[in-house]
Structure formats: structure tokens, C-alpha cells
Length: 194
Image (cartoon, rainbow, N blue to C red; front, side, top):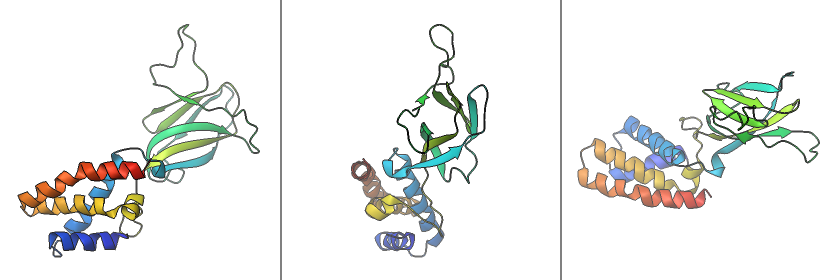
């Protein structure tokens, strides 16, 4: 369903077509709530990044660059990229920033860690390109609404948005009924998102 169709359904369920901005906000919040409840493969995106030459094989990428990482939410993986693929590309291991040294006090190799919006990578060799995988936020803007949950299972978003409107309008019994649907709907969304 489109954003307009989902909003229209919430109007029907709540019988409150007068709450235009409140309903649009409730739909955006409901969409975000379901997407943030888990890391779904449908929210996974990969970008190919050319990295600058580093003589010490330590690389740092700025994740706040929205042009490179649109709707960035959280990192998933970092891999070396070669064209053509040769089969021995490095699959970097995620590390905690406090665990970069091994038991002998030497720095580990072929790892990545995130510090704020900085992606820090250490390799045992020179890199040219990386594939960076990350989970995206959905686009919940009026002009660009894009949610696989809204398309595949719009009832989940409709139920959750309706519960927001019922709470807002003081309809406690309806709010409780629709709020109780969240866990059931989330279980179905998770089945779709496997």
C-alpha cells in the first residue's frame, strides 16, 4: 500500500479523518517502530566504497555522509571487493573498540569497529575497494514513503497507527485492543523479514 492508502485506512478504523497531521505522524511512527524492532534482510543495503591508499593499512570511513550511506541505521558487515572477484577477499570481523589487541598485546588484523559515525578498519594488506553492508531506516517522508512492511503487511502499520490515534483521542478501550495487536503483528512481520 502507499502512504496515502495506509492513512486512509487509519481514518476508516479510527473514524477520525479530521486528524490529518496526527494520523500521518502516527503512520510514520508505526512504520519506524516495526522497522526498528529487528534487523531485517529487506532493510540491508550494500555500497561499494573506494578507499584511499594507506601505508599502515588502517582506514577510516565517515558514515555520516548521507550520499554514500542513505538512510544509514547500523553497520552489518565489511568485505574487501576486487573486480574481478578472485575468491580470497577479506571478510572483516566486527570487533569491540576495547578488544583490538590479542592475548599477546598485538593488534588484531582484518577487523572493523564503529566509533560514532566513523568506521575504522584494519587490514593486513592494501585495499582498493570495500563493500560496506548496513541496515537502512525506511523512508517515511510524504513524498518518498518506502516501506516493505507497508507494502507486504500494511495491517501491522494500520493497527499500530490506529492505536496511537485512539490513545490521543482518549478511547482507552480501543487503544488497549489495538495496542495488543503489536506483538502478534511483529511476529508476522518477522516471519516475512527472515
